[in-house]
Length: 300
Image (cartoon, rainbow, N blue to C red; front, top):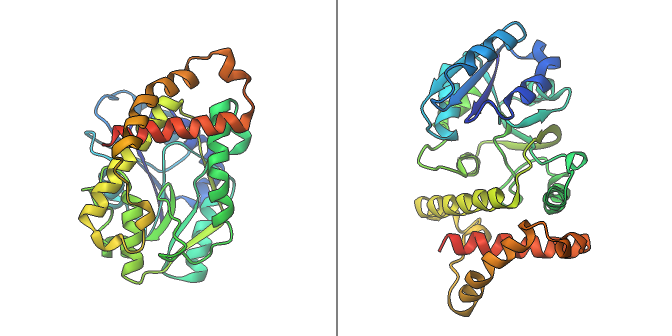
């Protein structure tokens, strides 16, 4: 039995698109568990039920805002499947995804499986969207040939992941201490305990998430804080992921970053004709500095 688990903080925004992209794969989903992680949407679950209950075997769980880790764990707790598949609520799933996840587990036994979780380049329709796709491109190229995930070639996301229920419970689920980066911690714990983790580049679910630069910076700042928390809780991870440990800025570099972060953000956000007329490669450089200066100085 297959349980598909989707946590959703704000189901009004992207969740219907995600569900619509799954309609063609209902034959492979025994139950679809939506964990609505907010208490402000009393009527929306009723709308979901009326539209999607006839399509999926739908289970809706509501709980107060508690974060992705708790939401995913709650979905696993109430699930009946022996195979758990996790998606985020802003994913556009390509045909065959669920069947491919199932086939891997039938053919290869007990493993943790993850796939593509990037943005679709075809959907980038503005300068910043194209920048985000360009930023992800080197990572997509780097990981596309990975089969067996290790601590040395690490790639993992829970936004497109499957795992036997038994293995999930053995690992204790996601660590609810971590407000972000909980899937990074989950996979590292699994590898350190010698569980098999695999990546399949053909498991495609695109992130339907196209933020403006302000919200992207806030998201990056949150993730940087989360990484600090994770490495403080698990200093043993640092020997494998020293390149991911957030650096504290000091001296002249910190002064320059604090001085320029506001003007740079204004420059790229103001819609002025000077920035709009710059070539794409120069815009990318300015976007990179704007994000780095704002993210790092916001976390000092």
